[in-house]
Length: 460
Image 1 (cartoon, rainbow, N blue to C red):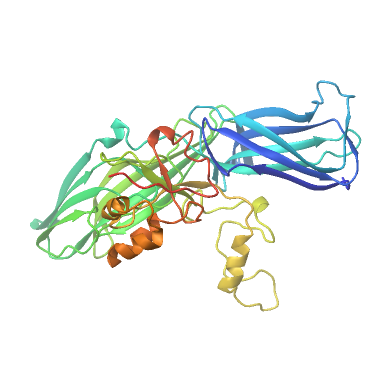
Image 2: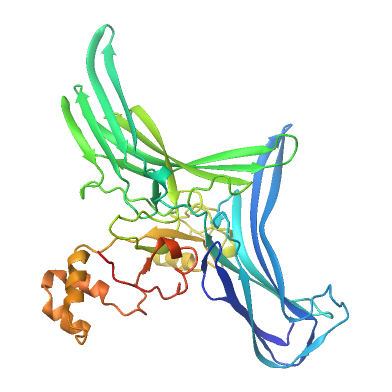
């Protein structure tokens, strides 16, 4: 109504974990005294799937919903079910009403946006005005889940596979290729390097390459009818091609070496048995590729995308941040039109403007401006790499006098370590600072300052 000049929902942070308290406030400014029954705040989590199928020659749309969270509190006045006729006068001015919810301590699916299914978490505020339409507001947030730790014993066991193939032409043997692959562990967080080794023997008269892929598989399910409907969508999350293995030679591949890093991109975590309508899992596919791009000796390994990174035995600390999903897998391809301003986004990158008149192509500046007008996108955990040389620099910093300023320390240390020193000595309020989290506090205490991430020194 016209008397309400400002209405906003503010959360203490934009990213939450299961079991954390969710706190915030509703800011309301009214120009005149208004009669209000009450102000209600709802916390909801909802999974929605929509599939288009062909039934008896007709195209039908099947929908299904699953509520993951549904809580309500009254932060001012009374609920409409308590006393329908009760009203109170809200005096004019600026008002701030605080609220708090407790997220359940259980395995919860992550926030995700795809064309056929969504999982959304949001806070909704309703100002109950009995004699007029009730103003409403919604604030979306990202939930990180489910809780998958790379340090669990079942993920630390190595997997090994090997195979060979004899190439023949008619009755004559023309050559042999053999492949042995070792996957050191089966769970990785986004931003970590894949730990894989391979031994390749090429006893043929042409060159080959080792091809590594991570395949994302999402299964949607709508429980309508007797059997329900399911649909599977497959995307390639990562593809890596090794250096060429020459004919009649053998080669060894190790992704842990600096010249062969394979970094896991930012993608939604594995989600199996958590949501009734949607499942996400990944497969690591390793194969030999010849000059004509033909693949052979294909091997598949199960791989899990976790939410808590691997920690080295020397320290239980790790650094994480949050980032958007890459735009070539499910979870990053599609942005709902309700979260975009000015244009409708259909999931496909556009290169020309719609409409006639012979208008030209969109410039990069125009395209970047459109991309900035996005109201909400879910984020996912991303592991941060430690700066090179940080171990020695950390020890040198600790050895300096406590009265020395960062400028004095920079001057005393070697010039080659300046970059690492600057990274360690940034003020805690810097936007490039990093979180150092322990596994015990990852789900409860690690994200109190999401807007300004704090940095701690690594103990080695």
